Image (cartoon, rainbow, N blue to C red; front, side, top):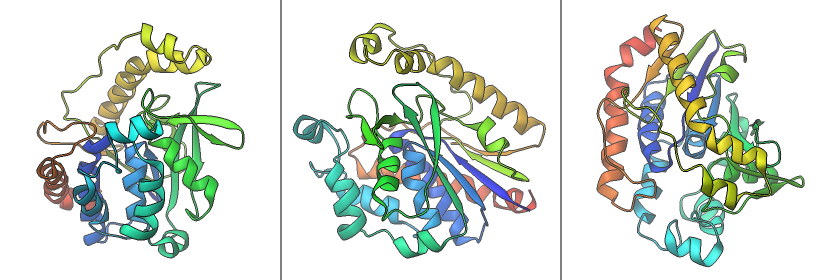
Length: 279
């Protein structure tokens, strides 16, 4: 039996996801493939590298470091998430990623990115994060529009995978998994609202397909959410979502808030542990 895991994005709301995957690691919940979107991909790598607590650890430790992520990084580098600090110093020096375990893991890992020219999602298989292109695809998946420079890989420009496919339920359904677990980062009652339609047209005027993806994102997101809820009711997938609302910023600096979101993920996963095992 092959089990797939879909990880929604949501910037620092994905501390919830980190809590869930740590419970999976601690309780030997076997996953065969992961599709991670945006921050879901950035934190999801810790399942494949089997590093319990890593995402929470560095997020809390460097939350208030001006070189980690935030306004200072945006003003000085053009990226809200500092490229060198996050994708060099943290992964190689400050809280190293276990590259060998990641590479040798049999878990197939896909990061979702959005192509600026086509406005379409691409699902990139990540096998070795020591490969420059693989790391760049991962960075692209988590690069939020408006506050990040496009990430160029093989002469193509990419940004946040959540723009084109926030909850890639159709993609993971077609990957041959017998069972699928979906981790969302919003409570059940959440629905995405229509955003400003003019600003994207101005900011990304050179990329009309990308603008279309941004402006239609709320429609596709809510459609995918409805599909997830329907499949959940039919017993075809298992969904883990926040059992309560935690007010957390996308770029959260409060370590207590990060801990609260992570602990909620742990709690919800543990409460569903028997159900997950039976599923």
